[in-house]
Length: 138
Image (cartoon, rainbow, N blue to C red; front, side, top):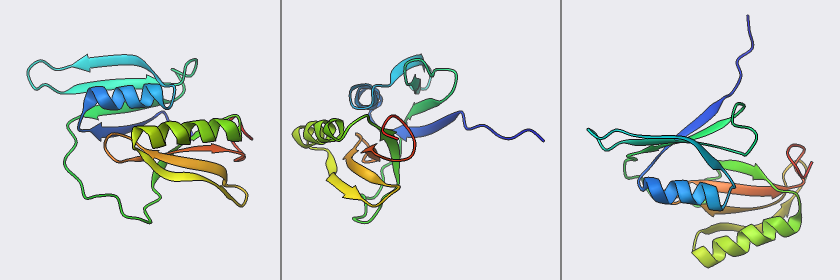
């Protein structure tokens, strides 16, 4: 049997344009495909890290239902690795200025490392880390 390969993660979003802009501006993802259904108004965007468009895609789908506010100890998140602590601090500063900082920068024991978290336009947590055993800070 062939081993499954993770190719994408998909999330619904309430404000499609705001969400695409957030993942472009905070995460460096670029649109590789976008489509809009004129009949339903639905929209879908495929985003990827530059150069990894055929490996892993992040899909945004318009039309998210309302959801309860994020619980204080809810650590469900998407994770992005950065190449330095300073880069984590810079994202945290941008998140603070934009009013979306969830977790200020902090250091946790291995394998967690140094990280912060910001909320996307739908309240999903997005972690930015340095020093985990994967990604550029490994």
